[in-house]
Length: 340
Image (cartoon, rainbow, N blue to C red):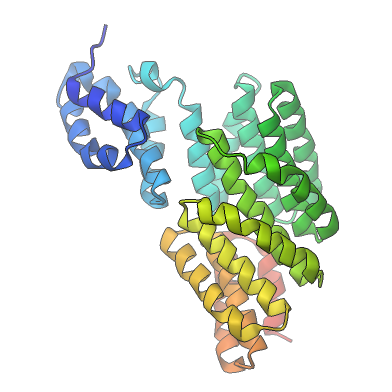
């Protein structure tokens, strides 16, 4: 039986107690030690995955993706399976990162593997929710709604209220993106108490982050639809979870929503600072879809302020960023703006 060396056991304990600083500070020396000893080499994938998860928690998304990809690739047949099981939790974390970075094709490949019937229900649910996000991003709302029904069925089979709340949060986001903001707000109101429930564990962390995405998305879409009362209310509801969140990404989502609501409320000068803040943060984090969205809103703010010479290159940049991501709907919309 493999007995891990003390350095690995200390590393594993640091990871379990959430000590990211120690995990990231000692991870490479532990990898070097394990890799140099044939009997310990099988534990390398576990270390890679723990480093990747810690990097993800520290919002170093690009580095986290690389470690998680390598760890998952080396996991099958290794002794690390006794430490991290089948690695599905890490695969779902990787899937979230791929979506944040706009790596949709790679994410879809993961989705296909993680939705296989042999997978555990929790894993299939997480992967199906990712399918919802991808199809909605590409404007296929019919498929997104069908997948939401599949996800709801999986959540019901799990008999897990938190999972059901997250699926309803997904439904609110999809409805908002469709322009059905009244229905979206109703779903948001229904699920927010569950999504913002405090407590430890990855599920509650994911649901808390989703609460911010739900409220800010509904706020932006409601403002665009002229429903400023709903937009202001959703913006207000997003403040507390965003303040509690440790993620810079969540703060940037709030800043972007604030900019859009202020712009649609006739306050374009006040909207400039938050939209610039959101854009800088999304770019720094490598979150390409959110960065492209913020770039488009920055252009809209500039145009509303009468800065037409500045707004056109901003629109062009946003158009190119959406095109690079393969998001045809947004690209076409910006082509229409540029040729009006």
